[in-house]
Image 1: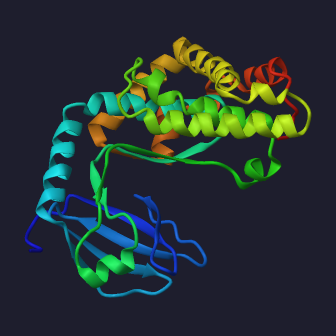
Image 2: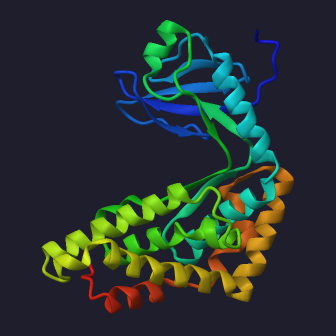
Length: 280
């Protein structure tokens, strides 16, 4: 079985009870959480714990029906690799233009991971509902920014969520997760503002969230239309397609991140426009 070629490697963060909490291409250990190396071979996964202790690798078989679904998704993904690169590069460049995050890694290589409870799947030796993973961008938000709870930061994170849509020239494929994240963030932001008496409670609904969402989308489009940003976005796309994987140093060198136009003042304008407090 292990004669099959290795297609990808991912790291899974797993709770002590066995629940898969998160997947990362790059290994990032956390206290109180298990880290498992997960290698994908098409018809099976080979997994081994690497933190807090090391264990021998074990095989989890992928049943034929699930394998066929994963293969179909992989083939479809490979036909739109360039659009995926544009999508991910859009996220990355907005992270830097809005000064909300650094980008640790970008990866175009398709992968798959198990979902659910890993410990249970190891006992059964059969994968439960394995999921296909296409291109990924790992943004790192500073702990200080997250704890400060500044509205400008929240608006910036939501705005970079439109990077995939505007970076791929409006291609809707792969944006559902981004839009869900954006709408959840903005709904929580407006609820917080309502509790503080800043906005009326009836502004929290779909229409109120949509208005703020459209304003942030317009800002994302404005940033991407800047000639400096557009040129560096295209260069990042080119390099990502050629290499399939870029680390933080490579990304920041391509973008010349420190000299990208700074749009943080526009986030402050939007905060004031919607009468939001500085803190949320």
